[in-house]
Length: 131
Image (cartoon, rainbow, N blue to C red; front, top):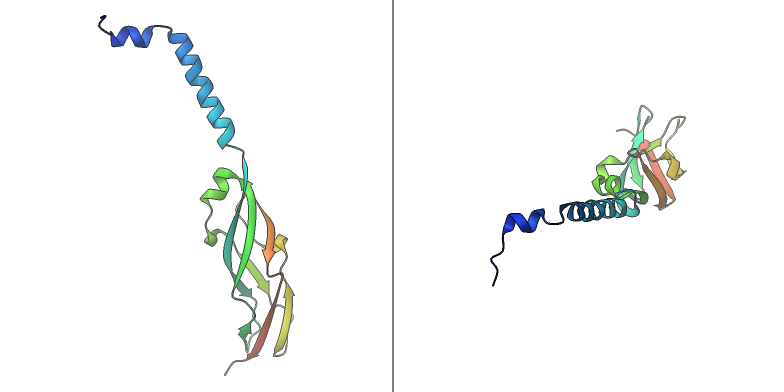
């Protein structure tokens, strides 16, 4: 029986082995990078420009579920804290209940991520006078 020489085994057909290794890396890279995936997150609503003398006393939901799409690497790195959904209360002068449509284009997202859906699509907010 022949003794196996490790150096000879590695260097024998070296160009073929290197070519196969390079091809394997390229195939792996092409299947993992640039692949678009969809992922769901639960994010909080943020009320901005609350009128002086008023406060948010009730809202139909505190969290919103969003589905996002983007390349695999970017989406997997995202966390819920990377998303922000502001509700602008500018223009409200009196206490009462107000309804807002939650639109995907209003969600602030990381670069390269697109909002696919948002649930619920509407939120009701009740404002009352500060005590």
